[in-house]
Image: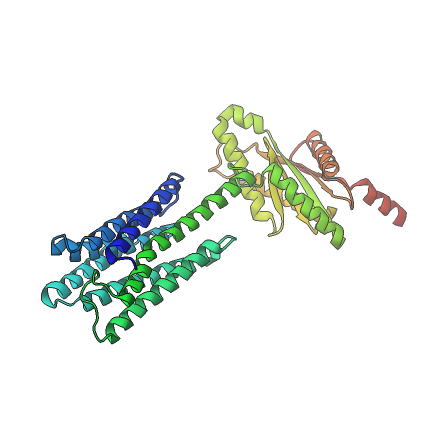
Length: 396
């Protein structure tokens, strides 16, 4: 069986390895990583102080080690809070760590009781687990699959909290409780091994959550236009392929709307590229206010956007186009939108025929949009696909 000193040194090494892993994620600017790094450093320090408790002055072996490990737990809580979009809560955590330090000193200098100090440490660390679990659960509405990072963290919190509760029960019921962390004991060593793995495991959970955030951020950046937040051209084609298949199966229409900004070059030339970027964002924001939940907005490039409208026939898609035209014209005319009074939209509307390729429908929408431009701009033009017109002629 490992000696208790060896267990603490191994735990310190695990904290160091976790520190190195967290350091790489910290370079990606994820909130909470600095607090997690601090937790790992404090965990290393606490474990080293515990390991050499017999060789060090009592103030370091007892108060120093306990305070370092308590501060490490508080730093973990702060890190998880920041990871989930909350404030770290540093003032409250600092007060709790200070109160812990005072009580630990009391049970050393006033009532010298290893059991009381151990119960205090276990209760504090169990509280850390409860706080982390509550923080993670409170953010479950924002979880993005796969959910293994959150489940891992919750499982670790439950196991560590139960382990500390078991340790408290053992200390309360043991006929001859140990008088020191370094005192050999089979049961004590078992709890010690479990407790020494707790901090690295919880820090690893934070690393997994951070990694999931980085991946989600990269996926979002790859599939969305960074200026307007609309879907990218590539992502639009992927979504359109799925919606076409669904429309074929259901027999429901699929509307397609192509949008081009009128006078975009004039705005750029007159007010600069910043004004052009603002115009693109204004259009995207105005469009999103009109769309339904299942509608898809994508930026095809330059000043051109496209909409995919599931379950919308030509009449419904044209009505959406008209709403968009009026919404952008009203937004561009507001006093705060300086230099955009000339901003309007030319919109081409069609529907994707059953079995028709997306490129054919896009070409028809593009032709229709240019009809709107040549007719004077700031208007909506619509054209049905030939299969639809043939059906109308047969039934007319």
